[in-house]
Image (tube, rainbow, N blue to C red):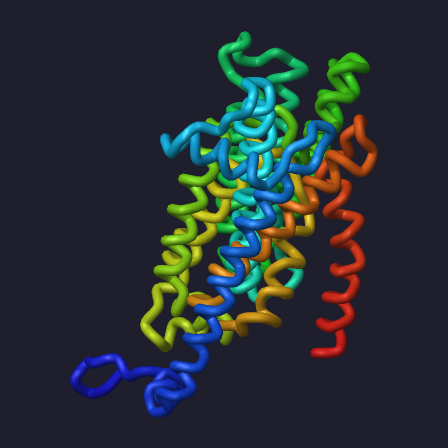
Length: 362
């Protein structure tokens, strides 16, 4: 701050303004990444929808989508039209939304907590959602008026509220937030195991465990629209705080010296990402490693500036989970593999690599 009370721009910003060519070059690179990512995502969705027992071409997919948007007629039979529009398309699009949302949440969490190993489930949201789902399915709480997704969402919010209460009571620092999340995760995981062991029959146990490992089977357009709306709002809020997230990379003290209200900003972003994670988990179950690994891959492409990083991370996560879900539903056809199992098989080696790079950096 100057003597007149005006904020002084950070040296990094001044340097960027002094070199417009460099800024323009980074802008062109970001534009190319976003454009390429959008095209790759559109192509991935179109191709993924064609993969399965029924013979479907990319042209069939485009014609059905155009027909449902009021542009001409598909010319396909009602059965093939239903396979594309009612079964494969919502599932593939929800995979893209979940991948994008989990990757964005992971990016924000890693910046806020200054922990490269943080992911969207560090606040115990996944464990709380699991408990809520089990309570509804196994114990029948709600008398049939509460769906599995609604129960999972309520459980996720309860877990997050407990984490915020514990971390605030313990001082509110980043390490206290992480420790509170670990405590909540263990608590709700224990509750879930207890309910399943004492009250569930074999069929309920199998169904619950499959959902807990992540499943996009049986989703509909309502899930797609709901999760997409929450993702859009979250992405806008996070992009609005892009410069703030850049400042958090240098620590809370550095962010405070730039005039950022550290506590309020952290609460806003933690609540936003927790709500998005809760919505995604309530629709698709717990899909791990996407929010842990994809932010690191995106940083290698787009750099650490969050205005460029967040969209690139979202696109990378969307493309990644589209193909992971395609693999999960076809590799052992007609049996389906939980999506979380496939992401774990891919994510564990990547996680080890992140640990190795983090160790070398220190």
